[in-house]
Length: 139
Image (cartoon, rainbow, N blue to C red; front, top):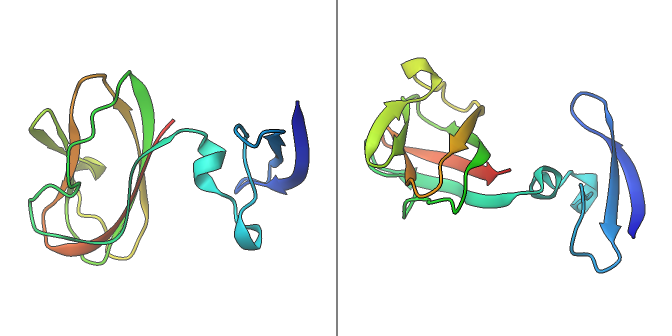
């Protein structure tokens, strides 16, 4: 049984019910501190990676270790960088650009939907040295 906690509106103005199971273990979405939406709870998936103010070296792996999903999954990657540069997705050691090969604009958020195949490895690279924000959610 779920306990209705609150109703909030998402970015499109759609009402999203906020509820928890009695044991607190499962929820559709949850209002966090100061009324902010807890995105991890809203997407209701596992966090592949979350790095704040990550200093990256040009053309080097951004993630400390490759991410390998246990099954086929969809994911949402959100990134921002303080320096314009081309972002690449590395799949099984092969690099390909995101954003149609265009540099990301400095200090802007970008979001990419990426399908993840089981047993493949994933990482990211940026063409320049920068400080990045990386949030990668498996849904």
